[in-house]
Image 1 (spheres, rainbow, N blue to C red):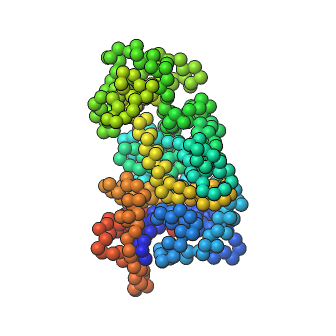
Image 2: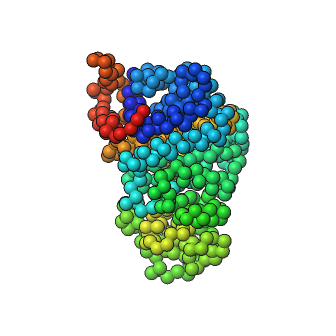
Image 3: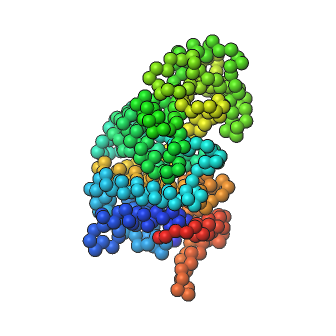
Length: 435
């Protein structure tokens, strides 16, 4: 087989219980006398996306790996399964989300979740992105970027500076949907919270950029007993407040390693601004920094320094730490880029119901990659992006050898990362789980 590394994904599915959970959750949509149950088809599609596929037909790359992933259905069978799931509508999406959440709980119990002791809070990043459509599809519309397609909202759990992130939720929307639609943001937030184990939900910090600016959204966050950290536009009121500050009001900002950052400072503007309409306890923190060489200044910059702001309802904490915590929200752009490299660059089906199922499969594929990292990999590969994992671990040539009534996966011994892959699979096999 040309992609022997699929064994890593299969062992991750076993250790997390995802294979079992999908089979149970989708059993009601199994046709009579069906050879291929929907749970296995969905899991195999997730394998294909994790390997770099971007359409239903790419499940064909698994047909030389049946000894690992099981019998692979034909293309027409795959299409029929997705059609059946699309007809199931919200019930199928809930079933997929439930199976995903159950597997996530098992992964976290095995040590594959965020390091709460180090991070303190649990950052949950919500952001919208445009998915280009190259043909007429349901709800494909002109977008604010003068393109054509859809505008889904995605939610990710950030594991912090030393890790990666988990895919929690995705809401399919028309291309002309507003980024700050409060109803859509709250729906995505609730779907994301339902994915988390109970002990994590109360510690969630919801982060968003200025595109998520909606008072109804912030009120919903506070109503759920959570904290938020959101980008705040540097407007004339900000400029007026900063101009009157003495120099000693500024504190050096921090780099990502927690050390002072040269040329950057932070301060708090809460008492200098009108915060009517914001939840009680909202604070505004400003950062000034000398722009890097070649950067263009903006009208809101002051004295040649770039001004950025954030609003948060976190009580206490050092200003540099709060500002650094929000700046790490930029990692969600890495998560979205990884999603578009794992099947989200294109919604391959016509109907919304089918594409909503597709998005859920993309989320499963992303987490298969993430969980394989958090449960089995160390060093740089623990935080590597999908492309790196594919080229180093998943694309290794292998052969199935059968002897003594047992099957053995023999990897190309000359592959530079063959030992790393064997060690990762061995770690996964040590985790109790069922198929």
